[in-house]
Image 1 (cartoon, rainbow, N blue to C red):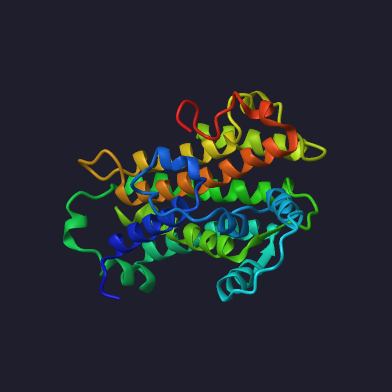
Image 2: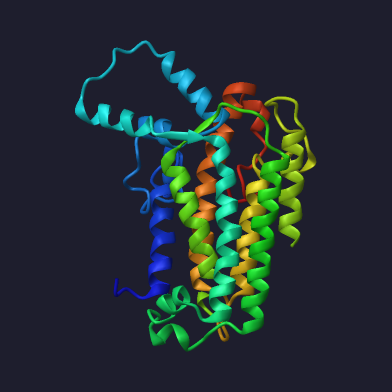
Length: 292
């Protein structure tokens, strides 16, 4: 309750990012040997990481293994947690939360409302030495609102009937992230969006799950994730307080986005490999060309 509000936001993003780092595939420990010294087993990744079509294929592949069921308490507990799922369509709620939160904090900041006061009075002086200008706050707020509204429209426009599900933990963290990032936009004081929109529209246009052939997908498995990272990178730079290169709170949010989507990009590559063969994605980067 007495923790600095800025530090609390950064801690949330970093902690959530660390949890995602722990469930990256084993080969990534070559690149992150110290951070990933304690990596989750494949059985945990298969339970909690995949969702949508990737989750379906994982369940099918696991059920094909004729192993006797384990009766251990740990396995039973993990299976019970993994069974707590929500419809994949709940992704729409992320962007509803984002838009409503952006509008809520706009009214709170402008009126110096009680919610704003509750956070503002918990910011240590050290975080107020170099602050964002009002123009920066307004610009980043508008961009965040546009991002949330655009993704909400895409969810309604590009959605298809599906029985896919995702683990409730993904849903809970997603809601929390979008509420937290709309605070990060103002607490220290769109090309990428267009690329991401093109990717989403193309994926929606596919009649069924096939290997994407759009130019944006020829060198990268998940270019729409690249666009998402670029959006938050732009906000991180645009919201830099006076005398700073970046907004450190949004930088921690960017770390969460990049790691979270990096995990999903890895499972997407695995899904493509299993469905279409290794050659189909051999020449493609997962998310960031030349890096990952």
